[in-house]
Image (cartoon, rainbow, N blue to C red; front, top):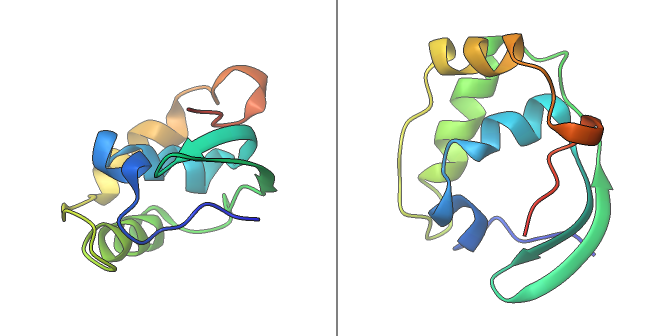
Length: 92
């Protein structure tokens, strides 16, 4: 039902995308690791920039993902920007 976080092709292709997904949610069709998904993840905009950065960094460095770091400054920039078209973080 939900796309995997483990060895996620979505995160490998664009590690910083996790910020937008957490802040703006994810709605509609998406392909992860060659499999199609179509569900809804509500935004978690109630989290602080530091919390989003910590969670994002943890996910990027867990479950066989390639690693990386999210900073609270990067989160603040994404939070200031308008949500992706349609108010979600749709993707392929």
